[in-house]
Structures are given as C-alpha cells and as structure tokens.
Image (cartoon, rainbow, N blue to C red; front, top):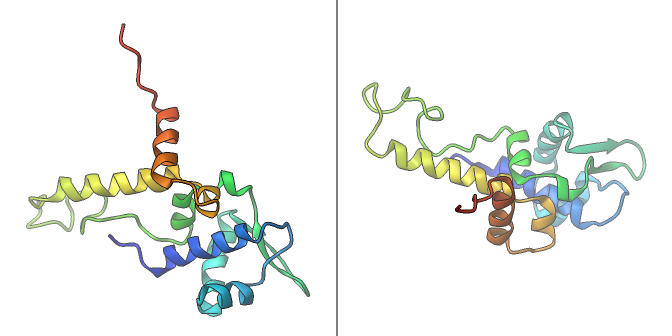
Length: 155
C-alpha cells in the first residue's frame, strides 16, 4: 500500500491536537516533541491540512494550530487525503489498467484493487474522535457503514 509517513504523521499530529482537549492552539514544536516528528516535516503537512480546512492557524505568542471542526466530524480518510497520500495498493492508477502488466490487468489486479477500496472505506468510516477516544475502530466502522447502507428487510 502506498501510504507513506506523510499520511501517518498527519493522523498522529491531528490526534495530538485533538487529545489536547482545549480550544487553544497547539504549537508544532510541542507536537514535534511529543510525537518525535521533525518540525520542518510537520510544517509541510500542516500547510496541506490548513488548505483543506482541517486545521486553523493562530500566529504570535501562544500560536499554533487547532482543529477547524469537531474531532467527531473529521474522517481519517480526509486527513490522509489532505496530506496528498494516495490510498492505492495496485501499481496501476485506481482501477485503470495503465501501468499494469503488458497493457492489461495483472492476474491479481482485482484482489489489490478491492483491498484498496476496503481500506479507504474503513478509514472513511473512522473519525479522529474514534481514534482519540480509543473506541473499537472495527466496530465503529461497521456501525457507520451500516447506517449509510442499511440492509433492507426481507418482505
């Protein structure tokens, strides 16, 4: 899966801010120290998170970043996507066959493509609040997916 440190670090940093519990901004220096992530790397990530409306910045003494929305309204998939991380497992682009084997689909293309969709679906069903509050992530994802796609009762 092509999920580099940028996506993982973005989620770690957002969880750090969310777990601070207050409305006061958290400095990148504090996040850097607690999460052992380079401050320069965090600056790159937070520029993208801010551009996507996931965090707000405050300048000056006591400045830093805070969540732009409630942590229950921020999906992990949104954070990873904002950090410019493709959730892709195949070597092809999405479900396209370009880049696969000899201009066609490789023998395992559908397997990896389906897994990629499952991973994305899972991350889209988990909120930052779920992570911070250490909820059962598999259960939370299943409940949210069931609410979106309820099983129709048999007649």
